[in-house]
Every structure is written in C-alpha cells, then in structure tokens.
Amino acid sequence: MTTRRIAAAWLVAEPLAAVLAMLDRDGEEARVVGGAVRNTLLGEPPGDTDIATTAAPDEVMRRARAAGFKAVPTGIDHGTVTVVAAGTPFEVTTLREDVETYGRKATVAFGRDWGVDAARRDFTMNALSLSPDGTLHDPVGGLPDLKARRVRFIGDPARRIDEDHLRILRFFRFQAAYGNGTADPDSLHACIVGREKLRGLSRERVRMELMKLVAAPAAASTLQTMADTGILQLVLGGIGRPWDLSVMAARERDLGLAPDPTRRLGALAVLIAEDAERLRERLRLTNAESERLAAMAEGWWRLCATTSEAEAKALLYRLGPVPYADRMLLAWTRAGAGASATDVPAEGAADAAAWTSLVTLPQRWCAPRFPIKASRFMARGLAGPALGAAMKAAEAAWIAAGFPMDAKALDGIVATVLVGRGGDRTA
Image (cartoon, rainbow, N blue to C red; front, top):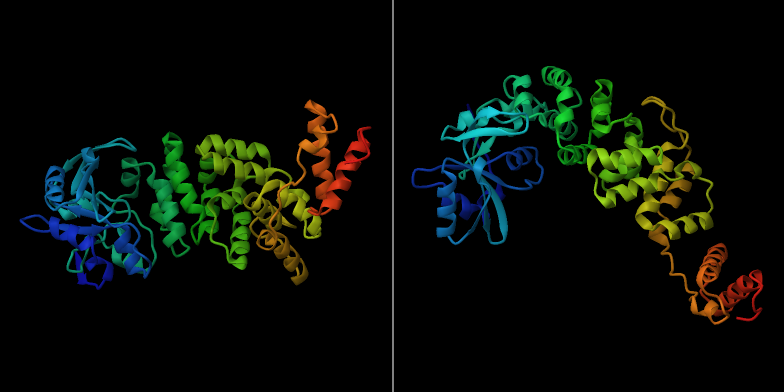
C-alpha cells in the first residue's frame, strides 16, 4: 500500500472537520474516499465529500446525534447514513465487502478492513482515501493510474462488471472525463464482452451516466470507441454520430458556452422527430429534455448561414431562447457535414461570423409580447373560430412587419386583417 501526506484546505475546513473528528476516535477510523480525493490530486474542485468509516451504521447515527448533527438512514441496509452538519450533507458509509452480487444489487457484510473495502470498488483511481491528517492511502495502485490518466478496473475487469453491470457505462464515462485518450485494453475488452448486460439496466441509471458522459472533455472520442464496439447502439437503440458531437463541442467552446448535455445528446443522436421520441422512451428523459430534443429535430436542416435576421427573429419569437439556440447550433454543427468523423464541416471566416451572429441573437434581442388584444376583434363582432383565425393572421402580419409596437402600425395590422375577413375597415 502506498501512503503519503497531502495538503488539502477543504479537509480541515468546517463542517467536514467536525464530522471527521466525531467519527475518527474511540477505536473507530474515518477517511474521505472517492471523487473528492481523486479530484484534489488532479487539481480540480473536490465536489461532494464522501466518508468511509469502520463504525457500524447505528454507531454512526448515535455519534452524529450526540454531536448535534442530523442523521438520516438513506441507505442503511448497505451501510450508508447521511450526516447533515451546518446544512451540509455528507454520505458516511461503513466499510463492507460483497457477499453476493446480482448485477445491480448486492448482499453486503460490514467490516473493518480498508483493503477489502477498497478491493470491491470499481476503478483504481476511486480506491484512494484520505485520513483527517492528510495521509493518502493507495491500496490498489490508483495513484500511478491517476497520474497517467488511466482508467482501470480493480483486479479482474470481468468480475467487477459481473458485480455491477452499470460499471460498463461508468468505465466509458470516466474515460471521457479523466482518461488519456487510450482506453485500458483489458478493461475495454471486458466491457465489449459484457455489453449485452447493458440491456438489463434501468433506463434512469443509463440516462444519468450518458448525460454525464456527453458533457465530459473527451466525450466525442470515447463515444466513437463505444460506436466502434457496438456499445453505443445498445445504449441509444439506434445509430450515434460522435463526429457531430465533436463539432458541437467545438461550437460551444468557440462561443464560450458551458457543455450542455441535452444539446450534445441531440447532436449525437437526433436527426428526425422519431429519434427524439425513441430517446425519450429509452432513456426516460425528463419532459424538459424531451421537449428540447423534439424542437432540435424539427427543421434544423432548413437553417443556413444565409438566414436573414428577420427570419431568425421570427424563429426566436416562436421557439424561445433555449430551443432557438439548440436548433441553430445543431444546424451550424451539421452545415456541410459528411457522414464520418473524418468528414467534418469546413467554413470560412465569413460563414463562421454569420453563424455566430445567428446563434447569439438571443443575447442581442429579446422577443416582445404580441401586443394586439383579442378585444379589438371582438368589438367588431368576431367570435369563436373566426376570432382565433383573426388573431393568428394579425400575429403573422405583426411578425412579418418586424414586431412593431407603435399604435399606428398596430392599427394598420388590425384594419388589414378585418378587411381581409370582409369586416369593418376601421379599427
């Protein structure tokens, strides 16, 4: 086992320090485990802080309540208690070993052996732990792998996957987030051999992993590996386009936008409305995600860099800022694109400037509310379907006129609609 000391300001900051002090005494030991340790060694923000302890779950709850903390038995059957200190939740899990595993479920036994607990985890870089005094523990060689950005299963990859089939997707997600571009051969081979096990996973868990994966730095190359090995097709239920996601990511970077998982999923897997519907069912997407994908699928191919500002404003008015940006970015992503990762769109500075102007329109212009009230037509005797048709015609005329707000222009639109319907010529 490798041990060394590291300095981490967050480790001695409250309320974490108080929670660790409460657990790490009187014959029990506690360490920070998982992502916080990994991220700190990579120079990244620690994120959520998880704690492992030799103390049994009931002892964790007793100590927490005695210290004035809230203790919630969120996963007590598997040894997890959520301790809330100063409004901050910490997941505290008792050391354990798997007695039996069933692909996504396990029978566990609580223990006191840190090495046994580490050996049951997924990847070597996730088995690192940190004592309250800053001592780093590395029982399975995770530190060299982390330095090399090598995502590698602990022990036998096939056994790790048999224990939890979701680890196939977690492998690719970690590869996209932390890998060096070349997947560990043994780990990748085990994922390919075990890929049919993905069919038994819950749609919610698959969605969770995929949404994290598509937003990761090396998402495009990782998804291409998944496509080449037949794994991506199993996840999506159809063909993916990793090269489109690669271009979308470049557009986001050029515009200073944060990675957007839903938008990237659209670039990866949505060409037509049926694709959006299939993903909604297959991944159990949220309503908001489904609506965005459906909006992306509708008519993106009609947009081009020569779209006028008036046409763009009309689209922005109809869709709203987020769906508008989604569809414009998707159109720009696929403008002139071919059907492979080596056939990406080429463009000149003028095209790039035109597309940038279209995509960023919501930052320069806010669509106004339609100002003509139905009462103006009702006063002329219109009602029911005739009233609805008049309002629809007036809105179309208002958009075509460039969204005027002055009274004279609005009066003219009302009068024109009334004349068209054989009504009064005055408004």
